[in-house]
Length: 267
Length: 303
Image (cartoon, rainbow over the protein chains, first blue to last red):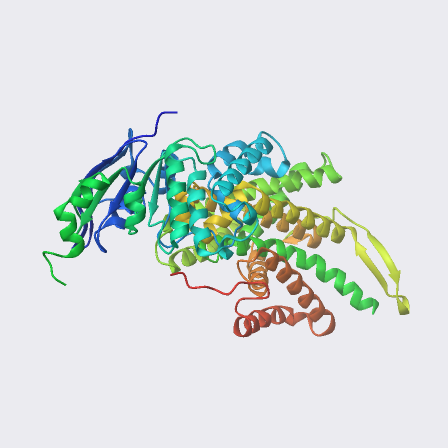
């Protein structure tokens, strides 16, 4: 497999009625990079994310992952195109076990092998092998996220930090080319944040759970995490891109400092 | 005592039929959050397809092979009806306001009844008993014989096999996992690559196949069907689903059994004319005092 695929966000605008939440934002996320999108509250980060991951349909602009036009695809096709995401407010299937959550993420592969599950009932076809493989992959990710001992517990019963890790594991089980993380460090303690940084780096480099390297797009407020792991940072404010560069460049950028410290707009 | 035992046997076999229909109600409710009011009529269609199947085979093969063949035939054809109902009446309305599919379900119910009435005539359709004879368990006081008819045994065994297969499908297979995932968070399931539309369609298809089993067993047990049987059976199965806790699959079977038993015992000891009153009084009491049903979950407002 190639070293990931380039994500091109080209002049994406998202309007809600009269409100322009994202205003002509363009950037590229290079393959094999961790690209972070940061900005003050209400800057439009999550809206942009929702456009990329098919949750919203952008009002205008193009979003290309390699040759695939993401802005034209319905939800389940986006996953097929190789985009996986996590949510700021965790959206696990709380009533299902951790292992089942990871197996749902491999649904497409398993369905193809089991002829819509009927083969599975009859114990026929290639299904047992496919299921074994899926369970193995799921267990590898549970191990990588340090959740192996909770495999058969209901996902909803896990502590908060563990749910975050499980959500990342579930996203990775779809076999993505681009992983989008929406504030993965929110609510984590410093030790958990450090472990998260480690995990995200391992995902980028393809050293976690035997998966292929995967580009990462990240929204994060925890500057320790962002500056520590990002290869490139895109800064949004009021829906527009105000800066883009390496962590060192961003730290020194006067626009960014103004946006964060509110130089132009005293509170 | 012997009399009560006999009623227990009768009630269980009737309850199994209700349970099979109730599973279809509760599964669809779980996944798309609507009551499929046409489901009772899908059961009726299943009974008619079984009748047609039996007539097609008449004089050809008979015995267990014929019964199995007709059952599979009825499940297949009725499943297609279930799928068609979903495609025509519900899928175009997905995402519109909650009452829209409910109303189109009532419309679909009327369409199916009139379709069968036109195609098959309005008269009662009798068939000769295919499975006859019974197994005497014991002779009670005053010569009262407690007997289980073979057809009752067939009903119970068929239902248990079908429900066991269904349980494996829901708990162990990718389709079952996808159905539960769609039930909990449809959008998220879609983002993980689950084709939610197809999963919902398959739920309707499976529900219709189960209703066809119920229709087939109903035909064998009572030997008479008409285009209107889906209404009463459907409302009773719906009551069973509510009693068991709508959305809960084991609850639907439990509710079906209870409704069957209540109806049978009421008929035996009070008045047979008012047996439907007993069943529907249960619906009202459950809705007032136990809205989540026996095995239902507390409805949690999603934020």
